[in-house]
Amino acid sequence: MNKKTIRDVDWNGKRALVRVDFNVPLDANGNITDDTRIRAALPTIRYLLEHGASVVLMSHLGRPKKKVVESMRLRPAAERLFELLPEAQEVKKTEVTTGPAAEAAASALKPGQVLLLENTRFDPREEANDQEMAQELAKLGDVYVNDAFGSAHRAHASTEGVARYLPAVAGFLMEAELSALFGALSDPQRPFITIIGGAKISDKIGVIENLLSKVNALMIGGGMANTFLLARGCNLGDSLVETESVDTARSLIDKAHAANVNLMLPTDAVIADAFKADAQQKVVPANEVPSGWRILDIGPETVKTFSNTIKEAKTIIWNGPMGVFEMEPFAKGTFAIAQAMAEAAAKGAMTIIGGGDSVSAVEQSGLADKMGHISTGGGASLELLEGQELPGVAALNDK
Ligand code: ADP
Ligand code: MG
View (cartoon, rainbow, N blue to C red):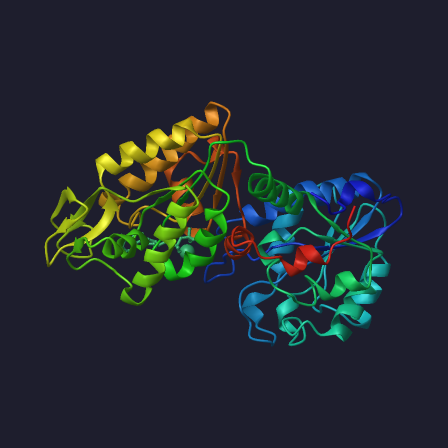
């Protein structure tokens, strides 16, 4: 990674202005139902405190549509952070994001203390990447730290604009994300393979195109495999297909062939006579789906072929479930791929999982802690896999 990190700064007596991702789910009473994202920021915050800094945190929460929404205040996040970080004698919280009250609170901080600003998206200028807001934010710290990988694909005032006015470095979470993903993409141990799934081919065309020039094998499952199967002339019954993308699928198949990439499609499928968990189901060859039936998971033969390839690989990136894993009868293919990846990881392969639904599937499988890297940023990791530059990363200082 060629970006400076918090290790490259002398923090003694400095005030760190840190963009974190505290976009946590809240229940109707405002209680945090999952604090994973707050925990993920702790290593960076601890490091800064231990090295003599005071810390000003900023984050968005939800989609308040450019105005103050009481239920989207960050107070619960500040309280949870203090529970998780008792060594910060106090976690202060302002009701504003910038301006005189925020400046007074920030400049009153002593080394070892933490302040959380209010939801950045309450300010209409945040998502417009307004430079006045960016300058107001920059007044609140001496050095900017971006640890919100999940927002790095957005050029907002708190993720990109502010970095123009302060020295700007990556936090540990950002660094871990970038080194895992860039490492795999730029200098992978081979065989390097990717598994792409999910509902729609149209969401992932950019990812497939970028990866085709890099990988040794590309496995395709999930609903999006259907469009490839259709391009090959299979009968798919009532399966989800994107007829407008058949030509794209065909050209990706040709490109893979020309690049000598082994493009692997499902050879069998679990089909159901309705889109529901208690539908009738059976396993058929992937080209023989009767009308009235639809593919909801990859079949056992496909699981075996994919798993064997995965277990031989040294670098594996997975994005997109193999089936409708939200329904238990159609989760087997997805969980089997997770299992194969865990086995590959145990043999020393680098295993990376990106994508919101893929990550929750891996968490459900109970194998998350066996994986090399689980990306916290759905959209951001997809854009990286597409080969795009993330504005929040580009804005950080080079080494
Ligand atoms: P990610 O969030 O990991 O990038 P996607 O959002 O692209 O993944 O895709 C996940 C969704 O794809 C899941 O909701 C899953 O139910 C759906 N899906 C997977 N296979 C099928 C299928 N055969 N038919 C319909 N939907 C599917
Ligand atoms: Mg998704």
